[in-house]
Amino acid sequence: MDISGLIDGYYSYNENRPSSAANNQTNDLYNFNDKTDQFNLSEARLTLNHDPDPVGAHIDLFYGRTNTLINSGSHDQGDYIEQAFLSLKPPKAKGFELDFGKFVTSAGAEVIESKDNWNYSRSILFAWAIPYYHFGVRTSMPVSKVDTIGVQVVNGWNNVTANNGGVTIGLTNALVKPKYTWNLNYYTGPSNTNTQNGYRNLIDTTLLLTPNAKFNAYLNYDYGQNRDGITSTGSGDKNLNHWQGAAIAAREQITGTSALAGRFEFFHDMNGYSTGVAQEVKEFTGTYEYKWVEGMLTRVEYRRDWSDEPYFHKGNTNLVDAQSTVSVGFVAFFGPKR
Image (cartoon, rainbow, N blue to C red; front, top):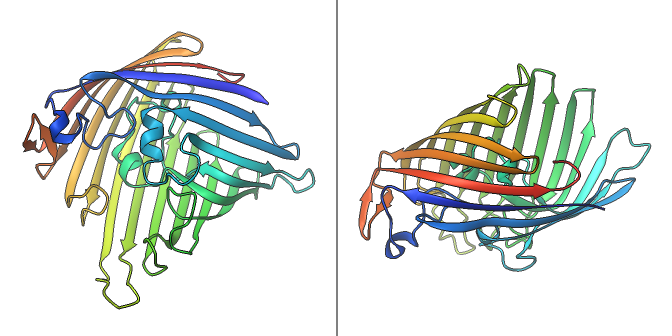
């Protein structure tokens, strides 16, 4: 097995200075580096991986703020496991692969590990529009030299054990060209607790542009909806909740050791289903990255979030329509593929 790992820590400053009494001293709308005005551990991770030949296995063990937020709604099994799945890749199946277990979602332009993203903080879309992980079966099959399709059958969003007796179906497609990559994902299935009524649907697509080795950009769009469950006594309200958003980001490799990245996004939580408040929120992030040596980097980041509602905590009791933060992240990682 290949062994790899990382340590990811940060310091974040919020101009609003939210207190512990207000919101547990966090940056609103953030996820993994959300604790503010303090040092914090985003995650410590250990990964064991064996590529399928034809059988393989992958295990991610993690600890820290990232683990707390990802597994916050599912404490039934594996609180400290991000992924754990077996893989099967028959030698005569023309590239077909099947995975079974717990694995991260195929949706989104970003991933959980900060080192593999362009910015240090994750986007609003990553935190509020899509799932983190699934448990079940996923497949992938190349249909040409540049196109791969897949089907997933999973226990819904962000849970190991299903809570409604239904399954969610995921359809994935990845088109990889020399100058661009286009990913399209669709998930549908019942996601309301204790009932199979009311489906949740998600359309996620990302266009990654790679015109040269130094400059990259992407466009990401998400549209989701969830219909309220109807109980057996007929006391459901049948409301259809919607959310959608778009993000654009770019990254320039300035030198061999430094890079600049920027991201702008818009998120419309039409019914308040995702964030708890019906609002239109925007966000801009600028990030400078410096790589000290192979396997160690620092990111310095400024981020501004603003909404058409007084959503962001300030001090002990105030709510305002914007927040500005400055974060410094330190990431060290090791493994055979750094």
